Picture 1: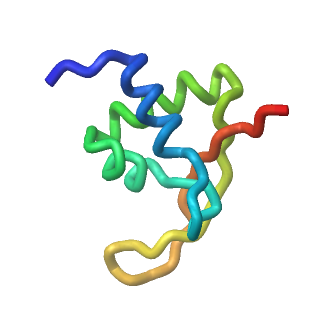
Picture 2: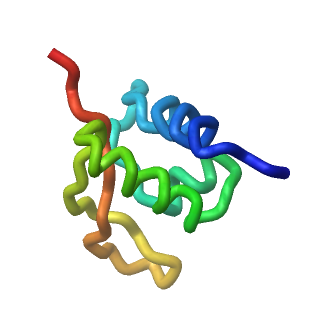
Length: 81
């Protein structure tokens, strides 16, 4: 399947929308799963959106596969005025 950058960006925007039960912050792994694409594609799309100041990064706690709570980069959409 050949996905365009614009399609990835649109899917990323949709995946980053806050929903009931979450704070609107997602890790690369969570976004890749939600978008059904590779983590590399998500990282590339996030890099574009961060450069354009449409997404901001911070650190959030996520449980690793070993059960240990770790700080990992998370991303959220920038609030529009």
